[in-house]
Length: 234
Image (cartoon, rainbow, N blue to C red):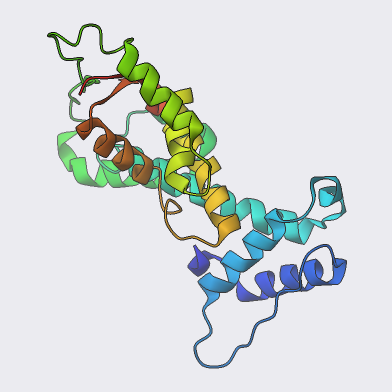
């Protein structure tokens, strides 16, 4: 993300944030070893640390830069989650229409890449991908999706503290919702803790869910990346 951010803009935003005195000052040096990405990350964390009731005091230079970076992170996550990106753009597809609304820059890049890939052959018919879930096992254990073992699993998940991000994600999976929305919450929490895990893309959360499936967790999946823990089949 830093390659699209002008250092002068970041420097101006940091100075404005430091001058406000709402959070600990951001100190940095331009000597050898300077890392623009690291400095940008510190700016984002500091901005998020501003108390809610004080956010209205933030000048446009801070708000605009913060929103630009946050939107870029969301766009990157959406791009990596989209299986049609750069090869299956379709102006009439509902996902493409939503992408055009939410991420116009990435939409145009996807359109251009798709048209280049398709060349003179024209649009290719895309195969419909069916969502699959891990079916509950049948046998002496009975109805495992809604049975005692699942209730025990839910109790275990809800009983964990949030000291680990995986515990936070497990609770979000139990609650159910869009993977991208879950990623936004987890990435923000990771940023507050100064962690690098679960901050790159929503696919990290999808990967955790797949590993949970190997342990018997049963998920319900739907459109727009919806996922919810609904059972246990071990």
